[in-house]
Image: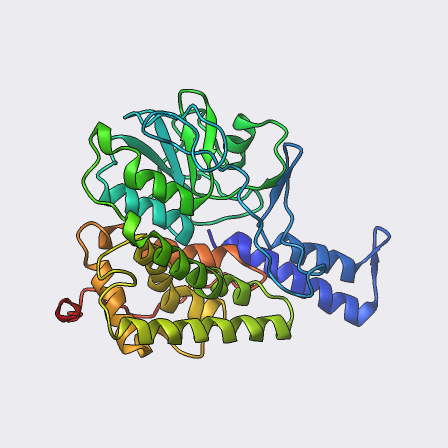
Length: 369
């Protein structure tokens, strides 16, 4: 697992050393260019272009060093009667056994859907596949590893094959989660925020567990909190971690910790983010917070403070973790290995840190709020 990573990083170092010492030319191409191409090859975050896989990192040069996330392209909805939802087309009726969920145990966006699937008791209604923790030159893959659940539909080796099964000419990033309709062999959605809303209510008439995590009376406030948390925290850690220039990195870190400070103040007064009850807003925040000290603090250089340094936020994190069914969806081994082994332009050695030591089972005391 580690040898290819060391070989890639070592190749770059040797090419640069040789080039500096001898100014060699190799096959008409300078060793500096070869080293640069090798460096690009370590980035491992490709996309499909007209159905063909291309190993290409995000274009931060055109955005002044900023990381800009592209919008999800599949925005259909599963509904109780199959009618069209707020976006996309209709035809996706909630039925037990019809849908399949593709996830990564490391990805915070996919983790949202895993949590909601668990809370709503949908494990027997919606099957699930889990990709490998390492994302390499072919993107998310189903290589055998602990926790991996292979693709049962076409025996896909790579996640991009599921996208081209849906559309052989698809162009765009290949992300998880993906909610797939086994009946029509089409992708319903690859937008996590909308998938969790489908899971919240669409399957209630076919045996889902009770619980409304986007109640009508709280929708407006939930939407407001979600918007702030998304820009400042959920996507904020990525804006810091994937920035390629100092100024956008510092701007992202500033926004991130201002948002965490705001959350600390809010959560010092109330047990949950909205309405003093567990809602989707808490689930969306939780999947970022639970990764913060293990991955974002070190790997993404979000290191002004840890979540553990925030009294209210750290207790809130433990409270949500200890909610029945949620804690067992957290897989720290997958989380650390995905970030530290996949983003080799950030961590060229491929070394996965031994720490930190995290105990989310400690008493939280928030039931008094």
